[in-house]
Length: 158
Image (tube, rainbow, N blue to C red; front, side):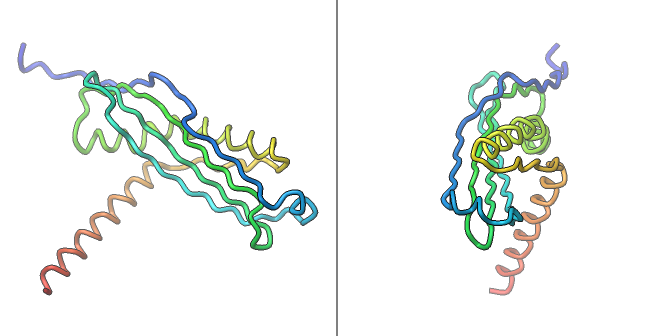
């Protein structure tokens, strides 16, 4: 039947590390300081359709900067990649799946990699708290809508 609905499918095909970087510019001196770091966490995701069969690559990038007394103790960057088969989901629903469901699967792998790198670098593990990618996605949508509203208001005043 031509009007048969396409079944929705979301399946993880593969998880892999795309890029890793660990820098510790203040060693060994930083080891003499009391370990009360200021930690900055930056998260990003990007996705690309990689074929016509419904396979998408999603890359979760996590960058952690730890500073002690305004000196960088370490900088960790991990790009955790995954290939996901997604069929029967389109438009806004597809964008939401790529920005929330896939990163939710990738995040524990990135977190483990980051902790291992920190420990091998001579530092305590970071133990990143779980991330609510659904809330981040809603926040990004709200910011985009606010920017579009602001741009429309600017155009109306010119």
